[in-house]
Structures are given as structure tokens and as C-alpha cells.
Length: 293
Image (cartoon, rainbow, N blue to C red; front, side, top):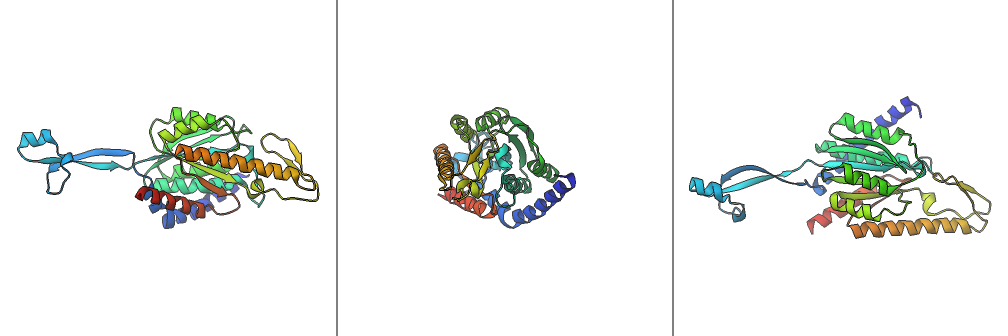
């Protein structure tokens, strides 16, 4: 992809996503992602109705009156977008790659974060750590993240989710939001995912292409070349191999969803052939209901 094409796509995503965030997601983001604690603001005189547990007894004893401590929510959050850039992300059966849906999704969260004065960072991984951009504020920083999501060329082809989570559990010191975007066609990441769910507000996002979830039965032979292991599979006329591949994806999806639920992590599923808006709206509504309970 030429640099001029990348810049045009970044600009298009900026315009479309910026409008979407302003109209739909900025308020939703603010309401469902709370600050990571509270900070002391001031001491003021006690007013009838104040919680007596907030009385500062030391100040009250010195002054002879009743004074309470006042706190403000520590609003600022860090948002880390961890994105799988393995070979399978550069697959698409409907005119666009899964990586393009990922870029749009990342843009929604990046612009939502900076609109609410939060920091946002990026971690790209395959079967190795590919790129780390520390969390920062600002529109220019968010645009850099979108540009990397669209144009980064990974060195690796495979997927190692455990490596991603172990790395972020180690290098990110402060609690915040961890958006983990992958097709989750991997194994052996159960323990680091549970640890990440304890440290962060972990949001796994599964991005799949329609052809991955339901391969068509066909009366001709079709060769499918795997983007990660480059092995070819021939579909029989009755679609037996297609059915086996579809069943494998279904089992992996169910296993991942069960793992996310056990870790207490809210889970978003994205169809790369469709807009990311509907699943994100559904996610925010479900998260809001949980908070109100």
C-alpha cells in the first residue's frame, strides 16, 4: 500500500470515526469506564447529611468543629490496544481484510479515549512482540496508532497470545483498559489471560471473517492456503473438509468465550464483513446494565 493511500484511509477513518465517537460513543465510554480510584481534594466544614465516616477527626479536634474530607474520582485512564497482526489478520472474503475492521475498531476506542482526556497506547504482536507505543494523549498520537494498525508490516506470521499478555502484564504498571483484539486461533494463553483480567479491565475482541465461521459446501475442489502455516487444504465435493474446518473454528470460539466468562472479561465479537458499530453499541449497553446492578 502506497503512503498516499495510507494517509487517505487514515483521514477517512478519522472523519468517520470522529463523527461516530462524538454522536454515539464518547458519552457511553465515559459512563462505563470509571477512573481507577479517588484522590484527596480538600477538607471542608461538616454539613448535615454528610457521611460521618468522612469526618477528619484530626482536623476536627484541632479546630473544635466538625470537618470532612472531600475526594474526587481519579478520572484519567490508560487504554492499551493490543492487536494480533499475524498472517490470519490479512484475510478477507468480502473485499476487505480483517485488519481493516480492526483499524476501525481501534480508532473508535482511541478517539473515545482522547476525547475524554485519557491516554491510549498500542501493542502489536504475532508470534513475537512487533511494536509497542506507550500510552499518550492527543489527536496526533491517536492518528499514529490508526496509521500503524493500517500499515504495519509484521515480521512474524504466527500467533502467540500468551506472549502478548505476559509482556503487557510486565511492562504496563498502571491499571487501565486492555483491549485485546485477535481471532483467538491459539492455545495455551489461559493463565496469562486470567492474570491480565485481574490487573486490567480486560476486553477481548474476537474478529472473524464470515468464510472462517462457515465454509461453503462445493461441488468443485477448492484449495485454501492458511495465512499462518501456509499449508493447503482441499475441500471434497461433499464438503467434509469444509465441515471439519468450520467445526474447529466453532470449538475454538466456544472455548475462548468460556475462558473469557471464567475470567470475568466482557467479550465483543466482530464480523469483519459488517460495521463495528452494532456490536460496540451492544457491548456498551450490556456494560452499563452491569454497572447499574
